Image (cartoon, rainbow, N blue to C red; front, top):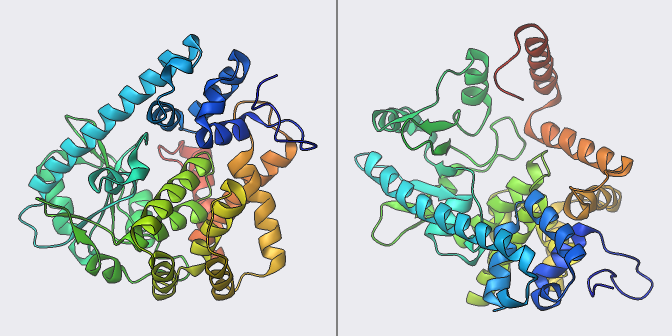
Length: 377
């Protein structure tokens, strides 16, 4: 029997997703597991976009030779893809700096590109789909013109979708470079303008830090964590939920080790940005899903400030347990399907008030029926 096949006495068998989480925490145990366990874990890692992170953990522990030989090529390919993507991000950021060099505005990298350019632990074994920038909203026309001049294009965007992005959302339609094929998301906030408690973006821009030998910037440490939490708990899509929670674990661990006052600063910053509740959910699920050691006073204070009641938290706990720990490669149970659907609807409800959401979904539904829209909701 595989050492990862059971959670412990009386706890029953682990799912493939739980085996993956255990393997990321205890690579020495996973390295000794049999082929059947590795087959399940590799499939789950690929579905969760965690293959490269698993490969990095195995390599960092010096356990490559302990892994069954059929599994090694998958890990090696993921590591090489991750390294290639990191090189590509650095090269793309060089081009972005060149394209925007004449604009006297702050240009702040977000999410994965900030992890890479900031040399953060969360970037190790991280795969990326695009580059995200944050710029002042009043400068969007200048930024868009400069990007188009240097080869980026949003392509043919449906007029309604274009208005949807520019009037209600926190970003422009995605740009794709005509030669390199790279995707760029230009943000002017970290939440849609129609959401409740939209933060004052100038707060994020003013506290960002310039990268060495570059005009590009990355957010304040606490803001990086808060934005990661906002992205995870405001989104309706949960396919990368576990990866995003592991990002938060890596970020919080690194920042807390570097700064004894990190947790206090995180609470203060979450209050100032009016984003306490996603920050609280982040520390709650880091503690209960990944067993991360977070000071009890931090959890207590954030819960108090969040205003989230016991019933609401009990419901969210059930839903997010499915999002984080249920397998994406095995047979999907009814509870898992319902949980994902509920979180999807919740994400839309957080994004827009009910009357706008109803109008938007009705319009998109009719457009799909009659004109086969080129862009999904």
